[in-house]
Length: 417
Image 1 (cartoon, rainbow, N blue to C red):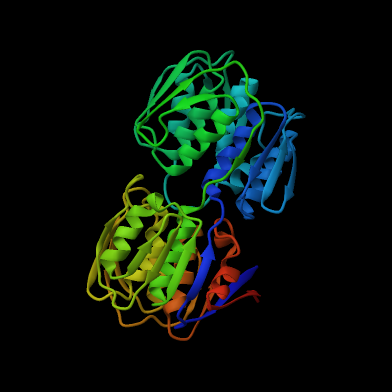
Image 2 (image 1 turned 60 degrees about the vertical axis):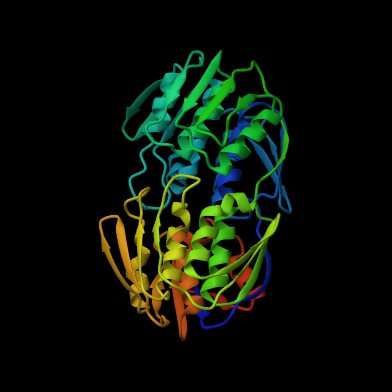
């Protein structure tokens, strides 16, 4: 076990480049299973979730090598359609394997996925979508058996614009017979990136980025080469880091259109942003409270709720943050209160009364994004903060401490006693 030790009240200054998005890389890695051959994926982040997906795919028969930030994935020898239970429980994104394995082998067996305990995240929408394409799903003893003699197109309406369900349905539908229409589809940039990769494989997918996606089924696909889009959540986190430290930070390799909601809120809070074609500069001095509500894209991302809440703890006045996506996504609040924050949570709403400063303390990262939020709070806090259980942070933030050090932060990764 390791922890971060952070000495706060240091202004961050400098430039940081954001790498590929984990949330785009994982479904694209899964999509390589749709055909036999060698696919090449560039700018894949080095994260524990990526490593877990590689392990699962190797157990299914794939050969994977990493060359720097590039994964070379050979799916020629895939011979299994059952995902081991212990790996399913390690990472929620393993559910993405259901669509590709159904598309290629018409049969798949897996247990319920794990991941961060941030709230109720059923896979009912995934199963409902696959059933609309002719899949017979049986659930017994914690396992899901899904089988389809042949997949056929149809109209799928998602009760909620779930990113995972949209992506799973897309991957199953590309080899289905006929046309599939996904209504109330998720609109996140990662959906568009998956569409781009599938079309490079020979699929016929259109509409990603809107609430209606059309997939014209094809008979076969071929391997493809692709570069993952930049990680908008990491980019947003580093922008908030610049603001909370009252520094001057330039975040490069970003798509500003993916970050309009966080840009808008940071400006409302009092930060000064300069938006370029592929970069954003942030500076701040006086911070003021705002109201924020998380919503599906293009609304304010739930993955950035915890990081920006840390910023609001030291903003003048009162802020109200409403979480509409996950009901348990305020686990960082108790830890922030250990650092002197004044926060009251009622249901899915947090009321934050800004304090002049936070103070260093011993805290624990309860999940991935909450862990990132605690690092941000530690950057602004007086004294030293120790953050335990940082393996959560390693799931989604690549080289976090090194990147922050390069901006001037005093942060170290040390062994826990």
